[in-house]
Image 1 (spheres, each protein chain N blue to C red):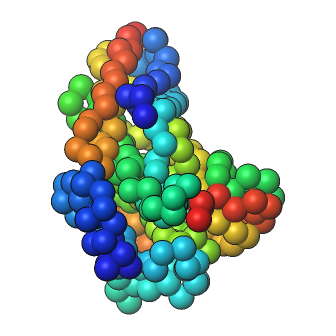
Image 2 (tube, rainbow over the protein chains, first blue to last red; image 1 turned 120 degrees about the vertical axis):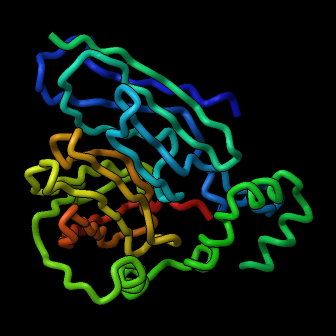
Image 3 (cartoon, each protein chain N blue to C red; image 1 turned 135 degrees about the vertical axis):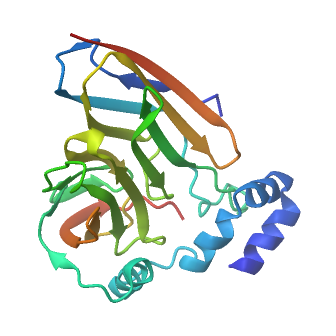
Length: 108
Length: 159
């Protein structure tokens, strides 16, 4: 499978104290480990098990995922911004890889 | 299941690596027999494992999902918890369980006061028509629960 591509949507600008919605998406099969291939062999589990979002290094939101999360996981949540800074996103794969994305926001 | 995982590991080195790195496969295996759907009691047991015998009040937690999901592979879900989300009273965690999935635990969402609202959306897999249950824990230690039924036309858990 190709390297998962994360996509995030964070508004470029916001007012101080505004609550913004953050939407994220990553291309990933989220192979649940129960499916079988054509030869009847079980396809090994390979999912993203942890998603985390920080703002200027401080944790905002995180989530543990099980195989019950759909392929190409979508995650949307809210955050209150009081200062300009960077949102950083990390998706932790079963195989130890971490996929990252970041997005800057200007707060007036 | 444990044995199945081991023999699969012999066949497939990458499988072994995945198991060794995460050691999660074993935990998940212990939680649910492969492809056998969970029962509502399994969800109750999982919640009990998390919170013991603490009282869980119904309400405050809302699960927005379609009444009928045509494709069980991708069922949109929005979890909303009624909370002021201040520094001393906020929702710490929301656990979501699907009563009829092979692995009932679906996800856990961890909020912080920086979220301002305890609302989040994602998409989940559902094997069959079933209830989805959410349990929210606040920073004060209170527990709330909510559930909703989704009718699934085509299940989305492979096989």
